[in-house]
Length: 274
Image (cartoon, rainbow, N blue to C red; front, side, top):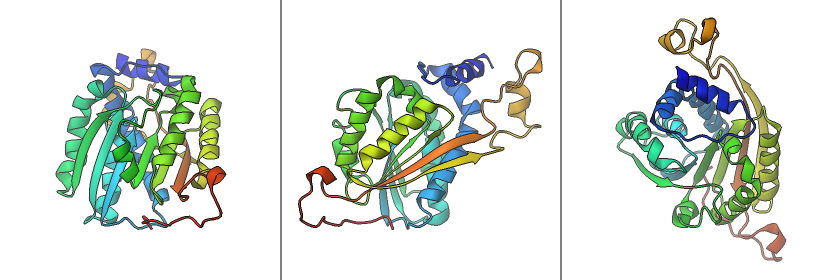
């Protein structure tokens, strides 16, 4: 319970700086994963509402923590396209802290549910110069790149992060999709996402943003989680999230080169998820 309080306090700021050591990681599983699974579910439903998954798909999850978005993607995959083969790639700065927690979650939530799913993990610092270049081979073949609820952890180095995302957008193959869902309650987060949209317009099409308010995502009032973990001093509730005010963005890579560099030559077309 004290670790849930620490997480809740840290996340109530515009800029988050946390060392996700073992106890905090497990507290995150209790307090945030149930809600963020739903948030991811809604993101994938919106992303693929007019698209069809191919026979095989390569996905990169950025700042993935315990692998919440991957479990939600697996849910979608098994429901809508169970024969699709999926390569899931996990990227996080604090890989050594999250790996033990994620191993169990991904094994139960992804790998053991389908023989068509394979998973790999990598360390990635989104605010390191040239962050994506080391794993360029993965990003250039990715069909889908996913980012959720991490902007407030990179916002202090927004210019470096923005340059890194420009490089990522340039790496993506045509028709690849970058989708994000983040908490829209903080103006710096909204501003950064707006700047990302401006960057991506050089490389493709921007769908959204979609501003959503998802309610009643937390554990029910009579659940064991709420009863035994979400009780603070004098019975004040500590449920980290009962609803999510999200801004969803979907970017589709379209151009063979940035608009500013294009010649009169018609752009090539590539394979599509739709």
